[in-house]
Image (cartoon, rainbow, N blue to C red):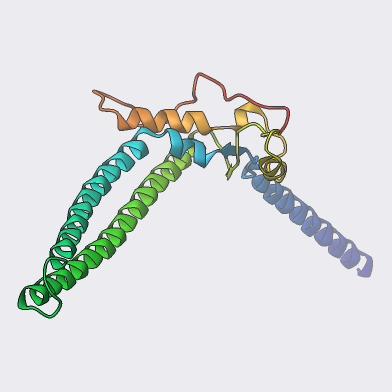
Length: 221
């Protein structure tokens, strides 16, 4: 009877061990099925900003506003100079001189206020432009990464090393990315999608596609 109990206990333990092994194996297989293979991509944000047509257009619009503001500031400065010149024709302390002096102080105050407001306004507008373009680029990068199964996109500099300028050469040698494959560089693909999306078109898939022209690589990187 005692031997029978021992045998039953051993069988129960073996059964439990078998069940645990199967469960662990199943969990391991499930975990493996969810394992994602890492795929790293690279993008030169400076290159995208420089060649994105919308960024160029927005900056040109801001440049036009700045030129108009500069023209107004120039006119205000000329008015100040004209008042200063008129003051030379009158004796200091005379009613005419004092009137011009008051006019000059007001004109100078208006000019300084205009200059400060314009400067703050243009800085805000420039910041909004950079923020808008940055968000559009990162949104496109997310779409691209999702479609082509990239798990990580890093910034890098795709330009060749400048061997003529020692300072730029040292900066280039300090790049984080030392080597990459041509397919890792998604810069031109993202830029192409952004420019195609910006231009008016009759139809579009809304899906970024790989650029037909492969990014050039350099052995100096």
